[in-house]
Length: 621
Image (tube, rainbow, N blue to C red; front, top):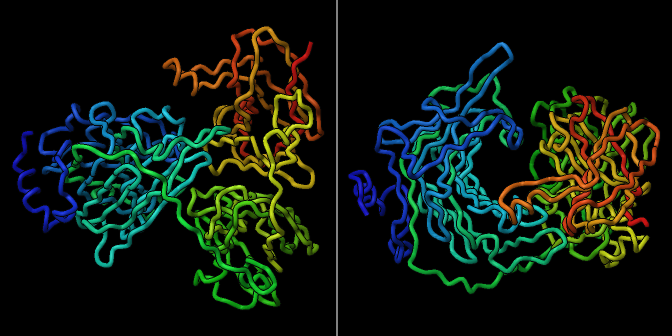
């Protein structure tokens, strides 16, 4: 392999600068990929430009384009420069995103980059990896993702290393805080050492995280053999996002000059000659704390006076445009809001370190009230597992009268010693005060094992849990924008409730769906369901081909609707909708039933609730 002068100098200094793993740790590695960015322009024999429209993922603002203003080489470095352009229709943002897909893909190895990150509210630079064939184990997150470096532009002394995997989505993440300096003003080296069954992350040669417990599975299927999904070729990605659900959005302090640049000195990948892939999954032994003497797992559920910012028991937070204060008096916590913010967690009361054990049933309860009718949300979620919900988001209807709310749920996931309770009071039309008291979480005993076959009242019905008697089990909920909508299941009424704040621009950006439904050619079927809405609107429903599976098998997506995907007009009154259709295509055991609630005839930005219940699909003679 040919080495540039810069490469030789960098390698000579490896033991004392930047990276660098010890000689012992580097033993057996060979350099397989290198770009020192010494040329006049990006080497497109190594890198691809990715092109994406604004809002493509994560509600980000930038368009990723191919432009020498956004991606260029200067002084032996790669520059990725986000730009802001003021137009008559508002601000326009562009940025750069490049990858090595199909030009350099690798399975196992050590990937590293030496770089500086941008500084400013709303920037999110990343050095990360995705699988070359995302369909091997299924679409994201089942396919797996490796994030080597992510730094929030307004917190440039902290970096995150993350794995995304599983079905449901699970996240393993660690953060690393610099003791001196920051990642924006000086170069630092970020690395990932990826071996079968073990992935380690480093900053400047210091191990900051390691993970060896992950999985992937497709809905209804068994888990894939370990170490899937991290046993397939991946490729490298470098980009700078502008705005989004995690970093927030640029504000008056955000500049788009040199401070906004991600400056990359080099990118390298090393590999060993061989790897032993005969590894077994190491499952961590989880220890959970005991409840209080009264059996309550919530600490200070009676709200004795405490510091609401010290993270010890309760913690009160505001973000994303939310402005409020909280105080404890008379065994009650009161939240007074001046600005509701843009997302439900703009105003938030949380408690972490809550243990939930697999196979047990729990009762979660609290008292709450306001001065007028208003809403808030409550949930138990998983900060260490991609923020998945174990219970919730339940919509809590508050009134001026103090009311006791009680919910029972089963912990079906593996034991989590660090679940979190969230009361979310942001992004609501009302800013009336919220009072919360007497919060409890108690274990009731072993949960009843529910089999898939138990979720049918009628053995001839092709839909599981169509009455939503088992929460949202067997159903999937897709939302293109995480802030646009939420799914809850009313435990008493046993009905799916979709709270929608913005239908976005197309119908499929909000969908309730059930997969793996078998339909046979020439057979006739009857689909029926109940539906209504707090705001008159249209809804589309379809029994359709799984386009992602079709692409995996045939090379291109095909989402053919076997029932022609009709629309129905929802009113504030409950209606029963029925459609008879004949399967005119070849047998398909992977049909998806979808209820599409994005924009159909018009974009709706007024918050409203859509209810769906009693879903049935049966063969008729």
